[in-house]
Image (cartoon, rainbow, N blue to C red; front, side, top):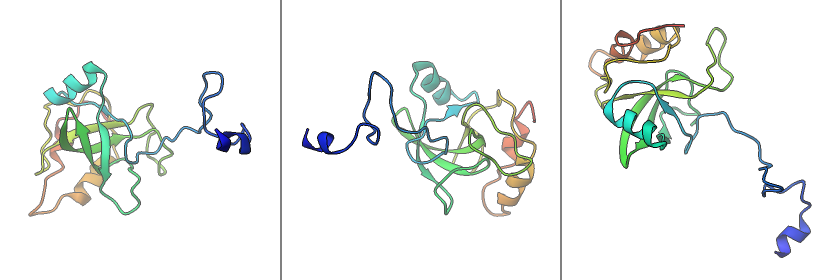
Length: 151
């Protein structure tokens, strides 16, 4: 109570009149909610219940996810990996910007859990996935094979 008296109301992030005063963060960081856009069973159940997956870890040095990055997700009490296929935040040149943060769930060896991707994915993702695919490692180009639309 004493702390609220010392700080002016315009600087705090408390709710006033039903509106939250903190800024919206469009970046994909820890605890960000994503939308599953493939047709895997666990993704469909989570989205139907209104409990979308949350990011636990972003696999890059900046800890901010961009299109094509791999993330670790908490979905339905399980840990799954996913590839970001669309982001709301400001993108690199010639990379489309989306209305939602989209993810496709994958196994540990890079194969997608679903058999079809419902939303369009960026065409630039082809070059990004080919660079990340190694001869002995995971094959991320399978993700491009199940996509139906490209932007």
